[in-house]
Image (cartoon, rainbow, N blue to C red; front, side):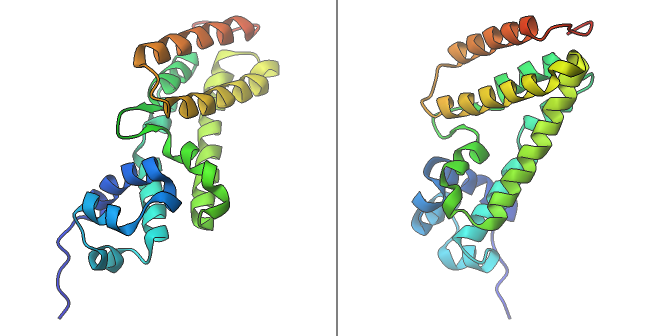
Length: 192
């Protein structure tokens, strides 16, 4: 008779996310995962086929539970959602900073194909949500350029967050950026 597992899958994933976030897939070893999750190697491998499988599951959980889409899909759409997304989607903490999916792309050549697909699919969903907000705020001729600008700025914020930028400085930068976006967006629709 198989012994029942003594851990919760979601709990293990929640504890593994910061480890992969900090060290990446290649820099994370099983001993660290054991120590941080409280589950030994045989327990981890009874639930996950490999370290790579655990990484993919952790990445998927992160993408499903993170704030990005929740913020961007708030009604009504517009620049307010974009500003909240830029303020709150990058994480600034001692344990992990930026965005796990953005940080993981630094190792894209060594990531499992399933992880690359997860990141690409989520990036497409995130960009679609950004676009819906921009479309609600500006005329059609400005949408593409503003979406590209926001995506590039967000990626830079996430990279910068790895340097543990001060939260107040981050807020000021986002507010300045949004002032420029609003001013440079041409004919802004009412209320944006």
